[in-house]
Image (cartoon, rainbow, N blue to C red; front, side, top):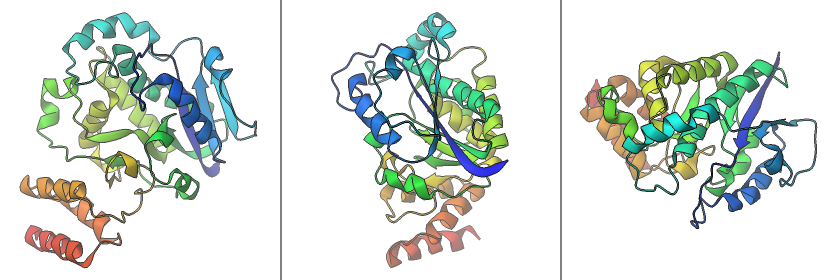
Length: 289
């Protein structure tokens, strides 16, 4: 097996109707075409009609898999009923078809892993429209092979809140589901765990299901921190000790969540942060002892 990364992505018609620039399906074609410019090993799922509209230069490390329907297509009616409980501030974006698709990325990831088209040791999910939001997407070319699953934590995940049945019924912005990467076997396990959670039906977006798995199987993850724009660029360190990361640290500290505090502190102390931020982090560390 070759030491390398296969990136998996996909794009489907989910009947979204909106004029919002970042959510309008028509704008995604430009962002997808930008993604294709990066010389990565990419396995891309889509339908025949969408494939015909994509612009790319064929190359050996860009493969397509044409599907008749989006993943979880057979669960649309079931999810449509479940989705009446989902509390969203943006119904034009968060449709039940979108819910199926966000969770369906794990089915696509699993299929790609089983096919293993490039015989790689590592796999990553990358949202088709990721270039619309991330800063420095070109850094994807420099990503190192992680020993655990790397994903971006946006907000602190309290171990108690994930036990609430209502947890998946709102978007909590805990984990950025648009990009995560890890060894093949761990990524396959991640997919299986997600599918086990939603076996009784899809009630929310993938981000909250991912947050539940993160706390249950904490030892297989090596998180990094920041906002949506920091996907990819913050994967090893951050150049900006933002209020968001500091808030995560404070919340973990207040909840006496020592393992999470250590993770955040370790991440920040290897980052080129300011002296005042470094003093703040070290004070937290000493208080924890």
